[in-house]
Structure formats: C-alpha cells, structure tokens
Image (cartoon, rainbow, N blue to C red; front, top):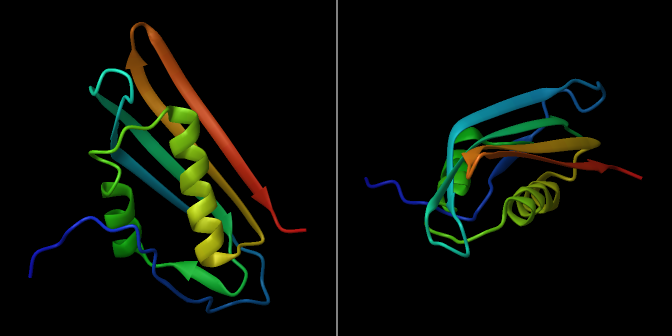
Amino acid sequence: MTTIPSKDIETFPNPRPGRDYEIAFEAPEFTCMCPRTGQPDFATIRIRYIPDDRCVELKSLKLYLWSYRNEGAFHEAVTNRILDDLVAATDPRWMLVEGDFYVRGGIKTVVRAEHRKA
C-alpha cells in the first residue's frame, strides 16, 4: 500500500476528556515552497494542545503536513492554516502551532498562532 499526502486530518476520542493535559508534536522535516521563488522552505512545526473531545491521529497528521511539500505558502499563512485546520478537526480547549523556519537570506522566521476555546 502506497502512502500519499492528504489534507484529511483524522481524530479519535479523547481517552480522558474530563482532564486538562497537554499533547505536543514536533515535525522537524516540514517543507513548503516559497510562493515567490518556488524554492523549498524548511521548518520545524511544533504543535501543542489541550484536547477536548477529540485528539489528532498521528499518521494522518504526518500525511497532512507532508501535503504542503509542493505548495507555495508564506510562513505566516501556512502556520495559521495548519492551526485553522487542526482546530476545525479537533475543537481543542487550547492549541498553539509554531512554524520555526530555517534561515533564508540571512533571516530566521518563527511564527506562532494560538487558539483558545471561548
């Protein structure tokens, strides 16, 4: 069976929905493309969240992040889109997505986007 990138984010029921606990992911091989030059942009994506009723399934997260490999996106846009998509899939109590992009042209970029349930 071949594994292919996908924008689908699968979830599973939170095993402890009555407790606040934090889940953290780190993806040090994230790649997207610069929308101006078409050159690859490399980053570490860090995701931290306190789940409510749903948790992110890891393989689907891997395939989701992989789906950006050939897409042009500004650092700010891709970090916020990842947050939006994960919030839509899981409706967490709190979530932070950090895009820690490697140096390009002598400038390092870190973008943090946060969601808090009202």
